[in-house]
Amino acid sequence: MPPSGRNAGLPPDPFFSGAGLDRADLMRGDPLALEKLKGRDDGLELVWADGLPAIGEDGRLQWSAAEHPDLFLGLDGDSPRFSAHQPAVGDVRAAFAMVGLLDPVEAPIYAAALSLAGWHSRHGFCASCGQPSDAVRGGWSRRCPGCSAEHFPRVDPVVIMLAEHDGDLLLGRQPHYPPNRYSALAGFVEVGESLEAAVARELHEEAGIRVSNVTYVASQPWPFPSSLMIGCTARAATRDLAIDTTELDDARWFSRAEVEAALAGNPDAVFLPPPRTAIARTLLEHWLLEEGR
Amino acid sequence: MPPSGRNAGLPPDPFFSGAGLDRADLMRGDPLALEKLKGRDDGLELVWADGLPAIGEDGRLQWSAAEHPDLFLGLDGDSPRFSAHQPAVGDVRAAFAMVGLLDPVEAPIYAAALSLAGWHSRHGFCASCGQPSDAVRGGWSRRCPGCSAEHFPRVDPVVIMLAEHDGDLLLGRQPHYPPNRYSALAGFVEVGESLEAAVARELHEEAGIRVSNVTYVASQPWPFPSSLMIGCTARAATRDLAIDTTELDDARWFSRAEVEAALAGNPDAVFLPPPRTAIARTLLEHWLLEEGR
Image (cartoon, rainbow over all chains, first blue to last red):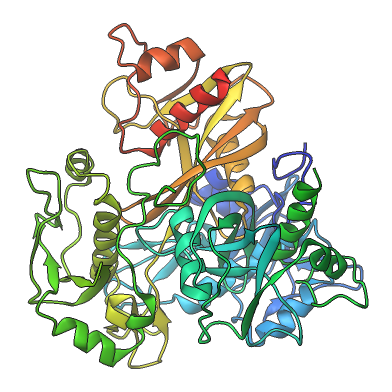
């Protein structure tokens, strides 16, 4: 079975979405077990470079002897893996480009370490009372010594979706994209919303269309800084677009042939597709397969 | 089409999962438009009772003239709806029981208001530098006057899942459940995890089983305090259980006939199912329908 437990017969699992390390959750809450793990000779610590987990020439993460076992990432077989606290990412665009070099098997470990370390660097104080808080549970939560509030790492769910109308797909451009790249529209899920309601709201806000038949496809953690991308398709009731130009440079309908040419890397393709690390690419691959059935 | 845009042919949408108000996102970022809305004669403000949105005898939310329009909930047609900041929920169990009285059409508004107001009450300080922060964007974010960090309301994704083995379903009991209630297992999605990886990890941690074929079914916002419940099914590779007794009182396999009897409210049923407001109930109803096909 695939490590993530996903359905068979679909395109490759999205990047970052595998099982990663055994997180050994029970050990986090056991201070004695954690101390033992930190004292182990075979414990390893993630190497960082420029605020990101370092990627070797072989595409693998780099590890050294565990000297700052602040965050307990989990077990690799029997061997404990740690990370130091590290500063947040400076240049997110450079980081996006870098992850393309990463071995997909290592990607979930990269994502967990980067999101966890980044969360600590941005959440040193108790949001409830303002006092400095302390990392506890092997770095998987922070506790306030003043008001005793416990805070857990944020995971921010984002819906990312393809809308279909009469065999065509809606794709859009964010201002920071490389020239001519089009990708799936996306937005954060808000409090009080189901995934389906969020998909419908975002497509209406950003493109002015109403949709039905929202269908889940796949999910992906995205560690810039800590999103959970939830990929869906939806059926558009209408074709006319009203684009929110504060969010998007452009949005357009593309034919199946245009999407196929773009994914095949055809030099005549009318747009540049999202990179292999993006779940938007998985959504496009999945849509082509489903359409072909 | 259903308000949430979900697939046809499924059981009723989960409670809390409808479209709710028009959130009018563009107005939040426009201080002049917000001021105009706050000054409108037809603006209404949610009534609270005991730290929760008040529910009338007709099952509807209660509204009064807008005197403390701190949080802009959205538009009902053309009429702006607000809420004051309110203290967090005292007795969560009492709140669970109360929501059963609520009209399902109003439930998404209840969920958004409760999660949003509760977030403000627990996040008055900047997690990045410890200074008191200010509500901005009609209450949809907080900004730190010291370090300029902007903080958005938390939405915590939770996977909730049925594992199936040879036609039987795995259900478990949390210590606080009423006697003999069994429901779907659940757990928070962690940083660096896909939904599928989280389902596999939680079922292994809590029940000791390995699963494949994780399939998404439905989602539901759950405002105690701000979860996004993501309902799935999975196929168990093995039947032997190793129960995490720090999380669960018990977990057992139930036959299709036992699940049917429980959902039908049969007095001879061997367990009490989750209430209609819980997505676990939707998962069970969906599973019976799918199995019956």
